[in-house]
Length: 247
Image (cartoon, rainbow, N blue to C red; front, side, top):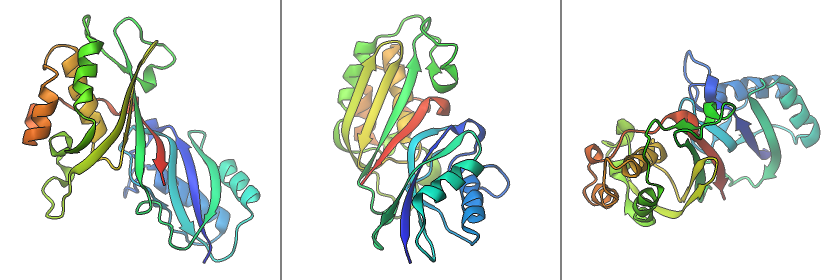
């Protein structure tokens, strides 16, 4: 059976996340319903991973298997003609039979957008965390961020969803953490994988460092102890974007 990888872009504001939920609108459910209408057959859309409620994606990947080869141009046009305005199919590409959107992935890139007090944008505020703090030390945030690079046990930065599972593996390698200063403060994370709400928990803790609530050394302490209670609260979902899934 021919296998294809589909790359979607979406505004997560009106969705409960990527993953199908029984009663609520999810991105996966929305895409799958349109997919089955276009293909005129049942089809399983398997994503590279889930994004939480309110999180956006610049490029989320998923794969499908179909009975007959697709006309890629016609398929993409038909999908985008039926998808809602806040979801777009960016590309369609045929893949080998052994390709899997999730298990073939080598890593992911996420980006988080922050606006410091007085620098918020009227037109971007739906997609950035507007901080209320009058004083904020970006250099201290950077000092804390440096401690996240490399291979660590990130258990202390994971939310509770899977922390008790017997097969739970919380070792990850943070390959890149870039911090851009300008109209926004943009944090870009690249790792071989991310735990449940890990990026939002990292951002929340780094913001606590920047506002002086925690010292930069708190980052290393959370990594060493794995104690979630030592870390900050999760940053709001609306500032987070899945940038790319790496293969």
